[in-house]
Length: 175
Image: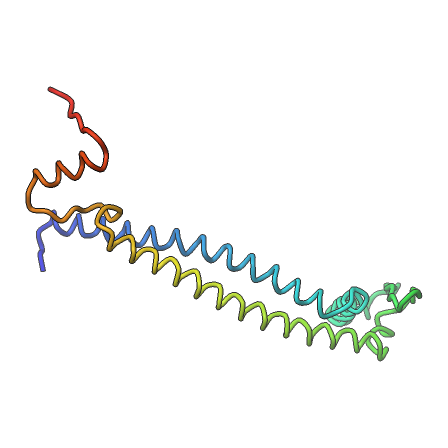
């Protein structure tokens, strides 16, 4: 352990740089995993439920949430419920008491849970796969002497020979 200020400063800079790079990579991974999860969840939901049941279920849950407020209104809002080719005009009270709209609301709740679980499973697997791939790639690069930025040699002549072979002739500016 070194308490030399120079060593502490350099160590702090290296630790901060590593943390910053780690956070940048996690930010990218999180963004794409979250966007993919949302899109996958929507796709699963749309594959499992018809648009008619989806819209009627959304109307049911909307009315259920705002029904305490609409009961005090003088003129009650009217909602359009689509039932195959028919368009039915329902009040909030009718929507909350009708078997079909209650069914659509419960179906939407059930399918949202299923789609959410499937999307979370895919997100977990995708995150694990991305971390595994990045970790494996980083380990391979750190083991590679050239990509890792090191040449393990004690002799400066060997290093110069390797640099000439790798990058051609190296010319240093004369001062």
